[in-house]
Image 1 (cartoon, one colour):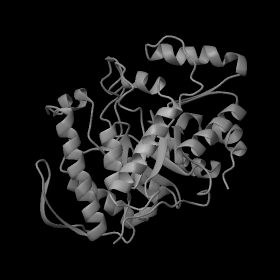
Image 2 (image 1 turned 60 degrees about the vertical axis):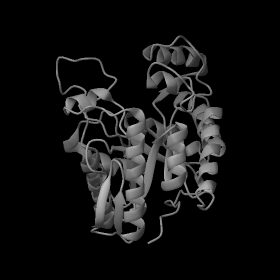
Image 3 (image 1 turned 90 degrees about the vertical axis):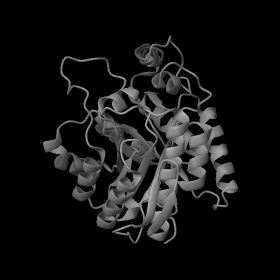
Image 4 (image 1 turned 90 degrees about the horizontal axis):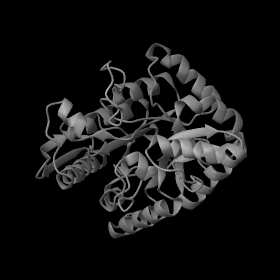
Length: 339
């Protein structure tokens, strides 16, 4: 079986819009929400893999910042819809044997079609989450080595249906993939470091772009706020080099990014709104006009910015917070050239 190449729904020639289920807790209303998202024209749903919000301060209620079970939610969304894509951004391979994740993604692909499933694999980075499970978080290099072995395993199982791997962190012996879907899910890696980009070029079908490693800041929200579009262009160039070095077809790895906040305001309010976002991350006031992870301003400004990002970065899709869906699809999406 060959690795899946880039593809897309009816809007494939234009930018696809995914919703990121950040903070969604009304699980009994999820079927109705899926129906509404389809009516709006949403292309897909993305979900991160966290036991709780690693950035949130301590709270009297332990469940206040709890995360949902990623694959359960994405599977339910896919079952409720005939067309919505689902994307994991991305499952932590440090919590379990990666073969179990590979198998769960394969089962979902067999049920709803692999062209609808982005199988995300990540190294894990939140020490508090490892500690909550009684696990010691391995050093950064070891976590990335384990991620690489996990990606090698995923690639072998999705391409060949069976795998042997004797790695330092991951081992399997003549392991079959059952079910082996007719169309494999798309292997997704998320990150911005040189090593992550290189791994995406060698093994993945999709890279979700994040702040590059040279953007040094005390916390990830700050790194994302000080990242520029040019920074991500460098990541895309590195990705192309890694694809070529691996002997894979040019353009075989698609890209996306997650928008952290969508802030509707008038032009005269942009500077103040940007300053508030920076203050929330512990940064002084600064322009966010060239930050790819923020949309601030009027609808026309947002639409132009999204099209600029798609053109400069070759984006397949952008994920935005689910709580902005109604206004975004009413006021911004109609201004996009999505055909």
